[in-house]
Length: 462
Image (cartoon, rainbow, N blue to C red):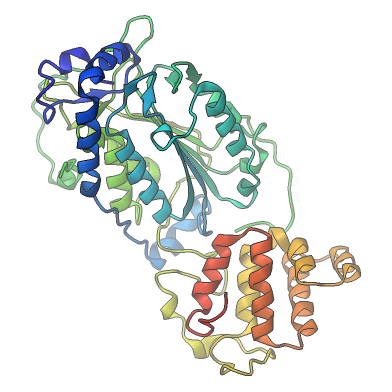
């Protein structure tokens, strides 16, 4: 929040810094009674100055060399990302925090996550009861069953162990993390769960502590010059695993225990800006923990106009060697066909497998049914029975195939062959019905991905 000593001159806002501590809410409320109009107009003026985020893409070679040691991250979407920003706490405004929301949303969308945003800045109720309701509903979302990762970003005032919500009540961090434990959230068991929390961590018994830093001469290292912060394969059968209750979590904080976290006027928080900048530039070839070390380097080099410093930290219970986002690439890396969004033109049409399915309006070398089958099998295996029924496969056939002692992939392949036979191998009709089935099972990300694959050949299909 806005500490009193940071506002010696309320008319000079360009050099002012804000922190996310609870201790100064009353000071801010007094400040806002005279400057609310100016703050709002200032915020509206800087909306156009938010930097455009462009995540650099991973290469196929990097994916092939690293995916075996890392968490699987190849689906589109990778998973769900929840962003909750508390902007107004009983009249105390967390100015410029809405800019963090925009940056984080852009970043994680480009990293292939479905982004869900709640903010009282947009009129959402973020009182304690509804805040926890949002988190509980998100943790129990059925979408996590087919996801490979989950991200939660929480931003508000706070102190060590808790954050403060819209009605001034506390939400304890451990209560949030417990919602996503392997016991309470089995759909995410064994999958990475990332928590980025923007709030101060001062000791509630002592109050906020500012890090004034110290002056030590350290030899320069040109290797780190680019880190300076710039203002301007899935199993065919289900298996039971005995897991500890809390695993595969990474929890990141903007400051160390006992210290405040700062925001910069018209920019947003130091931490979230550094996080977005580093992930956008380095996720292409760097694991998450290494990137968070780089984020810490950015944050630690910032300083307020009063000489205050900040150091970020994180803790990890990851059980894999590394976590990579593999941006720009989708499709199972061990599958025979690469569905890379940025490299799809590399797939030569005459190298696609042949198939008996006919299309009366397009040359059969342009696209074939085996390609479509592979897409469905690799991305929608968990929905094979639902899709079979949506595609009018006889219930007796579904039951008979489900009892066969073969893999799920083979079962789904048999279902898709029946789908083609029932439509006399007319590829256009098959695709029309498949698009409808994807809508019915609410797999819109795969619906749009399939449209993109087929666009050069069937631009009229939806």
